[in-house]
Amino acid sequence: MAARQHGAGVPEVIVPAARGHYERLVSLAADVRADADDSVHQMRVSTRRLRSVLGSYRRAFPPEATRTARAELRWLGSVLGKARDAEVLADRFSTLIDAQPGDLVVGSVHQRLVGTQQDLYRGAHANAVEVLAEPRYAALCALLDEITSGEYAVPPDVTLRAGLDKAYRQLRKAAKKVRRLVDEDGADVGPALHRVRKRAKKLRYAAEAVAVAEPSAADLGRAAKTLQTLLGDHQDGVLARAWIIDTVVQAREDDEDTFTYGLLYATEEETAGRALDALPRHVKAIRRAYRDLDLRH
Image (cartoon, rainbow, N blue to C red; front, top):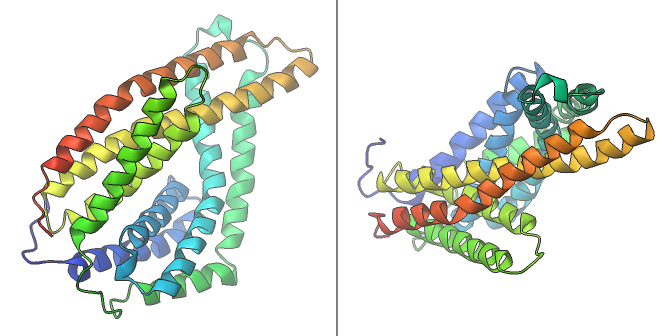
């Protein structure tokens, strides 16, 4: 557990946290170029952490430069995301296929699903490496260096608690929308669940930064991370099912047996249902952790 920094506020906690995320982002570029294991994922996480902290505590940073930086971080994250999504789906499909009885795996399902994603990863990774050599990326790094330097005077009314409160309210609002949709017959809850995941991630990153000054925020961060992970797996399943459906169309055109694709789809659908059932329990855990915060300002 982090040691409490007595009397620490946004300038002593949030600004250094943003600086740390920026420095990690820059350091990971070399690993991405070398295609080191998990490097794309880690750099993407750094972009998201930094963008989230800049958003939760936006008044702690220069306004115009921060708006531009957050937009550019979204761009960089989308570039890395194409490679990461393919990497995740390749692993997911491989695990899913291996879990099936051998005699139920027929046709070229492995090549169509796993092989296709591996090919997509190689292309997306090559594109990411090119992007990291472009002036646009260099300009983003220079801008982030300026924003996180600590030279901007943080307004005295910007508090650690304010960022957590806002992120928590946004999460609760998103979770309530899911509950309303669940009660509607035939409603598509997928986009709403994805929004809950993004809100959980925002709350997690803010709580983890604040935990340096207030250890009780660590429990909130852990609870938000658990929900984020649950819904992250759900979102990966949404992408997987979409790929399975598209692949079935091509397999049928090639007169290939599509039984295994139906089996894989059903397995993913069952997993998605469990995630939805678990949502209320995790939201309650976050609410308890939020109420236990020992943070006055």
